[in-house]
Length: 205
Image 1: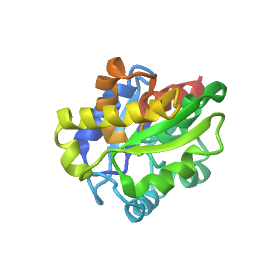
Image 2: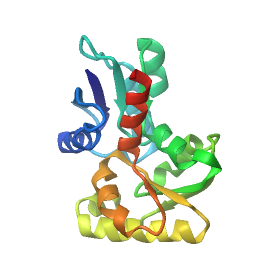
Image 3: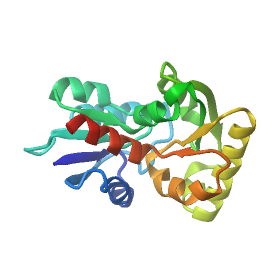
Image 4: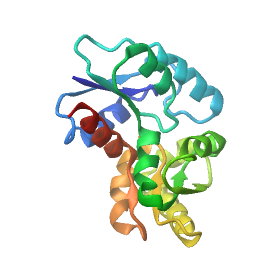
């Protein structure tokens, strides 16, 4: 089995991400943190999530772990400790977005995490152009799918105008929004959860 580990405490988000990833990983199971925020909004919360993920004990028979938070908290430490495949949704999305040297950007809802996102996106195969952040409080925006879609689509258009040829929707809790917005985007949208699932399936093939 493969474990999709959500370091947020929102079990509904875990279930939604598992449903999106399962076409590539039939034996996928979800894990949701029992402590911490329902959405990671700042570097301190991301660091605490990294500690939770790094200490994770997957169930017997687990062949790999997807870390389903966009900052990939604790992924490298967990991989080192377990000695089996660990894929972060952020790094998987960056590889897909930058494939062939493509210019890409991120659209997200968490302004306090842009420096961490920038660090994760750089150094890959493409040309990273930066983050485009939605206005307003992230929690309020994510509680209103229609408003979330409008704000993210505006960020996507800004990124495209600045030269992005692909845009990553940056956040595990935004996985369903990414699916909704794909038909309306002026450029290809990179969806982190499917990219991580595809990467895990390739590693285990």
